[in-house]
Amino acid sequence: MRLNAAASCDVAEIPARGAEFHSPRGAVPPLLKWTGSKRSQAAQIAALAPAYNRYFEPFLGGGALLYLLGRPGSVGGDSYAPLMDFWTMVRDDPESLIEDYRRQWKSLQADFPDYFYLVRDRFNREQRPQDLNFLMRTCVNGIARFSRKGKFNNSFHLSRRGMQPRRFAEIVRDWSCCVANIEFMCGDFSVTVAGSRAGDFVYMDPPYAGNKQRYIGNLEIDRFFTALEELNRRDVKWALSFDGARGSTVYEHAVPPDLYLRKKSIPSGHSAVAKVLNGPVEMVTESLYLNY
Ligand SMILES: C[S@@+](CC[C@H](N)C(=O)[O-])C[C@H]1O[C@@H](n2cnc3c(N)ncnc32)[C@H](O)[C@@H]1O
Image 1: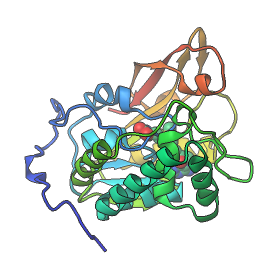
Image 2: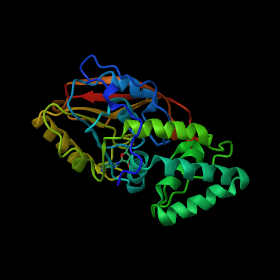
Image 3: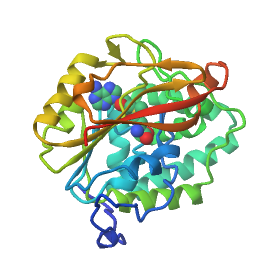
Image 4: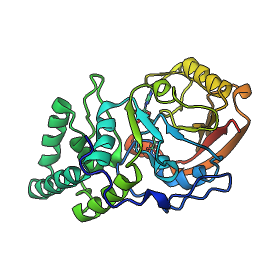
């Protein structure tokens, strides 16, 4: 049920995207902190988008590109259920999310920092999307870190008292308009892109590909490449953020050259993952593979 779907959103303002497309939306507002977020590179990636009918983002995470490229009829998906529950709430019930955050923020100021750990325990029992949002806003460097048993185990970021509720409310309402007519799916990337057809555009940002293992998280590389081949066969345009360079080390997951036409280098600042692991802070460049 759509409780509060974008009452004051003017989706007609969003023009059709074309090869010359530059998003009418400015910087991506920080809705959900998410590991590997493309917020800082989103404008550079969006500027390379082709003309397209529908937009698909099957590794949605914090959805930075969705903000710039999504339009009515777009599809966003992710395999992490609490995350997709969060997105559904932003779209369908933003005022409840805003109110919940306001209450949680007040509780944190009153019971600092113990309230964080109370929420963390509750999230590990109940998986409430509001709690995921709260934890991501206040945990060390905004990194979603889980134990082997799948329990969220990152700690409180002592200097982080959480974004002011009024600012959070503005951001949620803005995003809620943006995703008002977007379909969300919880599941494997292959399910999210299953309905894409010739003329559609898919942006993919799978989990960090900094090693040469066959699996990245739960993503099996060969199966992923087969899916890209299938998109090519259907004449679906896609862009893929995949490997890159960190400092002097280059991480190269060989995307088979016959699958794509161009490869661009996108500077992406410093590595937050290295920071949370107390590693050296290094400049990271990511590759963007395009099949058009
Ligand atoms: C690097 S993050 C995406 C970040 C996103 N571009 C942003 O701006 O925040 C990768 C996402 O892929 C999801 N994921 C991992 N394996 C998946 C799979 N097999 N199918 C769909 N999503 C998957 C993870 O839950 C994670 O949210």
